[in-house]
Image (cartoon, rainbow, N blue to C red):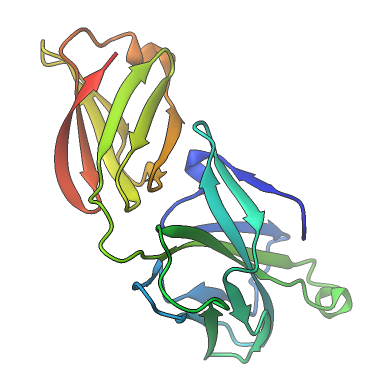
Length: 240
C-alpha cells in the first residue's frame, strides 16, 4: 500500500483495533497484540512486536510501517523504510505467538525523536473456507512506535481553545500523550472532552482535536485544561 493514510483523533490511539465482521458465526482465528506501544531507546537498532492468535485456527497477518507526522490539524501516515518489519507477513498457528522485529537500517542515534505507526492487518482467509458460515472477520491494529533521541528536551505543551477545537503545540523533544481530558472555567463550569485517550502531540509538532461546539459555548473566561499527560495528571492554562 503506497497511498497516504489519514486518521482522525479517535482513530489513532496508543493502539487502535478495528473489527469488520460479516455474518453472525464466531471467527476461528483471533489476532491480538501484546503491546499498546513500542519505544526504541536512543541508539537502539531494533524493537520487538509480539502478535498472538488466541483462536483455534491459524491466521495470517501483514505488518507495515508508516512514518507518523502532524500537519497542525491531523495525523499524517506515509509509508517508510526508515523502520522495517521483519517478517512483513506472518502466519500464526492457533493459540500461538509470533515475534516481529522492527529494525532501523540506519546506525547510531537519531538527531530528533522519530514517530511511526505500525499497522497490523489480519489477512482474509480463503473465501471458500468460510462458505456456508458466511463469516469474514478482519482485525487492524495501529501501534505507536517512538525512536528516542539522546537527551531530548522535555515535553512543552501549550493549548488553546478555538471555535470547535482544542489546538495544542508541543515544542519539546518528546511526544505528549493526552489521556483523559476536561476543561473548566473560572466559574467552575466543567466540560469533559474524553475519559479515555484523546491522542498525541508529537515532538516539535502541533495537532488540533475537534470538539463539540455546544460544549465549548458553555465555558467562560479563566480556562484551565486538566489532562493526563503521559500518564500523569497536569493542569494547564488554556488560552482562547
